[in-house]
Length: 292
Image: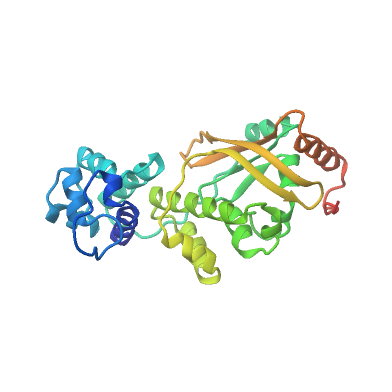
């Protein structure tokens, strides 16, 4: 797949956000025709010619050395996630072109489900790079109960975020959560540009959701998988939960990750999470969570 447009748009958006003074350059006289740095200024900062950088920004990245990519990353002040994304784009451009591939869903080993089920005080689940939820423990399913209403296909964070109106109530800061979701998908697209299922998901969301289209066009990426999220759960109300995501090794090298949510001890969120765990452990299968 030709990813030159992704390379062009990613580099252009990174260049546009940096003011000359942020890069240690004098603004110069006259009116600037572009936001942020000019191409020739990035070239100077990276130690390459303007013509060479212009070709790079047009998507001709195949065969570029790691040292040069590092120099461009420093010039554009890329963070860890953005630097990784740039290198992923370069690797994808170097590989022979091929048709989009449909990867079968990676089966979850029984030992992984056992591990999830052993976490009775934490909400835990396993998801792939497309943000499909492939396995969860009882509390994880209860925490994300609005997302599991459609039994016809796997629960997916991106679809829930942008296609289900209830997500605006579920996430206390919907805007931030939506931006994080798209940034994770954008990073996955850089890693797996030939994933047909991912391209279909992006196409579906781009067609239906303007909020998704706007964020997708920003080319922001994210790989950091820890922090705090704020929920308004339909059964127990406000929850402020700390989460950590770990890479899950698999035999077929699929990008699976296990995410674990916990509450700070002694907080109202810990009490609410215990109530939710107690209800989830005793509720009959298929019963909808009650409202508070």
